[in-house]
Image (cartoon, rainbow, N blue to C red; front, side):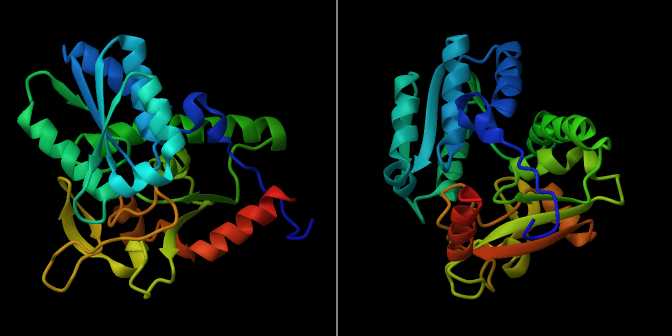
Length: 277
């Protein structure tokens, strides 16, 4: 009533394991089995992808190693405990910012050194082809469900706006996927501005980034004038990534999606307000 609109929340937190990540890990673990791999590795930021990977590895009886930034291990201790309970080994990434980017670096190093028996389950729409496309397709169930649920609730499949947060961007890719060709649907991608876009402690890639290469893909990337990747920051352990998936870079460049950013304080304040509404 306050905003004279209807706001629907897509509750991916109610999925098994507590996030949308399991949509992707189920698909990739079946591929790993088909390829005859016996050892699974993954990166994780907030820990949700790690939990989802550990879950499907337990289901399939495969060895699971999860790389996680040393800082994230401390601030996401409950998810670390869940991964270990599911039988996964959690290895800390101790270089750089000790967060998601560095966990991904370590996972890729492991993958390169163990190509015969190891499958890398990437958790977002990042990395080398075909991962960005494959993860987006697995996560596209989100937008398919939105269409079905809106048809039941409103008698129409398309909303006026679809809004999602973007770090690497897997939940956003899934939420946007089936609306990309629906021109009447406005797509809004929200990035983490941290302590302010130009504060030096931010992860607002669309505002701060330029074209570069990270983890095997060409995309928008936060970098110094000489091309070195700069350290991102966000209060959210899953959004402090210095790039975005190449799909999102394309949506930004073609202006199909509007990219905005909000600070830690704004996110926390509105999260509390939403909880009390």
